[in-house]
Length: 300
Image 1 (cartoon, rainbow, N blue to C red):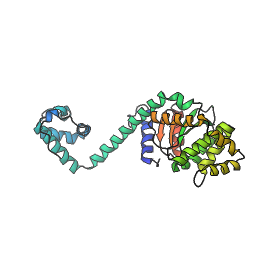
Image 2: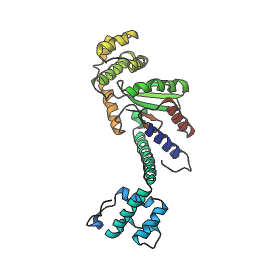
Image 3: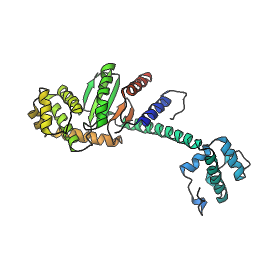
Image 4: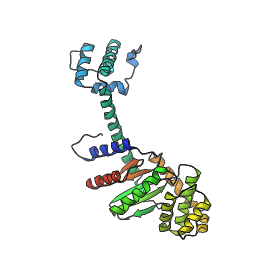
């Protein structure tokens, strides 16, 4: 998944607003022939929140004596609706910056809503995320912060994130990392995940992570001969690993993670869960450190 710098800024901004008490949670066509049957669109309703100068001018345009804030947008006549639209169009042409302001507010609201949806999904799938026997735990098993990573060995941004994730784990010393094999980029991805999981079955967790790390930095195409050469350089028995690839637990692990990813609406890699919050896409080391610091500050 490509770097989502805009999303990361929104995520961090919305997270700060959500976690810090006292701050806000953020995060010209003619009218139809039968206006009474027309359901106002969200954009149409959003005009109710436009600046006071505009709503005052709308009141005059509609011939409304009451304050503009009292205009009932759901019950305008055809003439009033046409006047409203004309005034909105004129105002926006004179003040185009309002559109950018509205878009910024919308993005903040959407980011906040996404955070809430993700937090609910994480809570509903906590056992599968944090306590599954299918997973390998790296770092401090008793760490005060848990990070879950959904990854694919052929994903360029997973590869870019890998050394930074490991720096985070090693520099911090109090983070528990759970690796979720999530091969979604084709046959080579699937083969690499099957080989890594089989390594765990044949040789244990320590060997699994050594192979995991090697596959993340491996050059060239993934194939069984290439994988055998890779594990031979690590002093592991490639034949035993290949034999273990036929164990039903290998595909069961992948299927389990696919199902979990579907529950969490994960469609790309890397995807992370930091505590109870989901972050989709690559985040650089300093960004991850900020997220961890905020989690600790808020007792998560």
